[in-house]
Amino acid sequence: MNKREKLSLNNKNILITGGTGSFGTKCVETILKNYKPKRLVILSRDELKQYEMSQIFSETKYPCLRYFIGDVRDKERVKRACAEVDIIIHAAAMKQITAAEYNPTECIATNILGAQNIIDGAIVNNVEKVIAISTDKAANPINLYGATKLCSDKLFVA
Image (cartoon, rainbow, N blue to C red):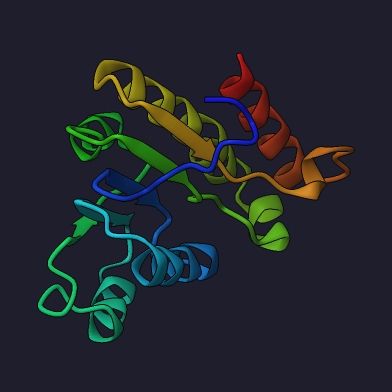
C-alpha cells in the first residue's frame, strides 16, 4: 500500500490500545460512524471506563465491539489481545507529565515496554498493520514523557 491509498477498516479486525482514553474514544466513534469493521476490540486496563464507554457504544447496538481488560505492560495479555487482529491502533500511554516524572518506572513500563509488547504481539500474530500514536513531545524531549515516546517511536520504526 502506498501512502496515498486510503486504509480501509471495513471487514477488518481492529485492536485499539488505550481504547477508553480521549483519543481511543474518538477513534472508536469515528470508526463506528465511517466503517464496518468485522471486530473492534477496545483494550484498556480501566474497567470503569470500559463500562462507561459501553453505555455509549453498546455491544448490542454495535455487535462488532469487544471490551478487553488488559494492560500493555502485560506481554501475555497483549499477545492474546492481538490474536486474529488485522490492524492495531496503539494509543495506550502514560501521558500526564507530572505523573510520569513522579513515577518514572511506571512511565517507562507503559510507554516503552508496552510498545515493545505491542510490537511482539503484532509479530507473533502476523498483524497486517500497526499504527502507533506519537506526540510532538517526542521530537525534542525535555521531560520523561517525551523521552519515553521518542523511544517508543524508535522501536516502532525499527
